[in-house]
Amino acid sequence: MLGTVLVAPQGCRSGSSGDVRPVAHPMSDVDPDAVAVAVAGIRERIRRVAGERPVELIAVTKGFGVDAIQAAVAAGCTSVGENYAQELRDKAALLPEGFARPQVHFIGQLQSNKVRLIAPLVNVWQSIDRAALADEVARRAPQATVFVQVNTTDEAGKGGCEPASTAALVTHCAALGLSVVGLMTVGPTSADPGQTRVAFRCLRSAADDLGLAWCSMGMSADLEIALEEGATHIRIGSALFGQRPQRRAQMG
Image (cartoon, rainbow, N blue to C red; front, side, top):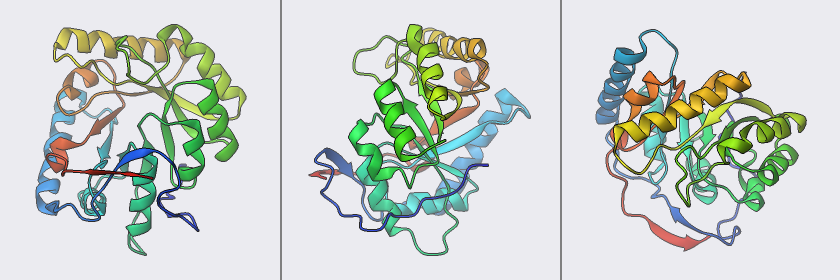
């Protein structure tokens, strides 16, 4: 069973990562009632496609304050997704004592030297896309639960290993003692449903070939296609919380 460890590490200090990252507002005026309605709506969309098949809803709280995490948990979400190491650390430090902290899925591209900053905070690493990153996660979080991220769209600048390299990376992760539970992808920038379906079908096929049960794919606009193609985890942000607040960038 995965533990819940969204607890700020001792001695955290902002400004130590040397990277430019968006910083979440401590509070972002999220309406808990509206989030509860939105979560119910997303769950109904899931049910209409997937029926009783288990699907994990990951509430993507990047760019929002701790109130978004609190609202998601109050609405019944047990998992949140974060993209930025420093933002995750900052928000973990602001959550109140006694709060029923959710599972944290790290879903953003990550430099290997940032792993140490968030290793105590992450339950599931969804964006393992290269051997060096897997090596560092295994060193900082032995036996961690991971997804291998695959670039199924061939879009430059998008995270993920090449499809042809997926099996080798999965094997490498397993040899390190990491628990590889599935594959993850980000859909194409294009809104063309045909291209989206091809990308998601590619991921599901690769997962099946490797004997991996879980596929993390699909966001607000394309979750139905993702579910039709076998998604087990979907990542939803703006459909739950609205547009992200204006974020300022700082060194840290």
